Image 1 (cartoon, rainbow, N blue to C red):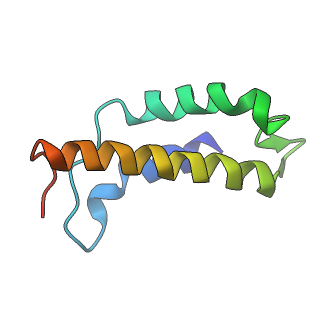
Image 2: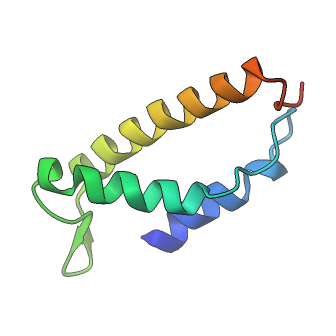
Length: 82
């Protein structure tokens, strides 16, 4: 599961539209968010090799919100490519 999420963080630079460079510390931020959300999720993203789609959806929704906040902050200081 973490390989999938790490791939998401690492491949943003390969999108076919202008995008900011990969964020330094993005994996650390994902792990921190996951640790923060773990009690709320009610368990891990996977159990016995099975993905909990509801938990993954909740995590990804929070991750998207966090990413949007970071990108807006970077845009305000002129760090985003356009």
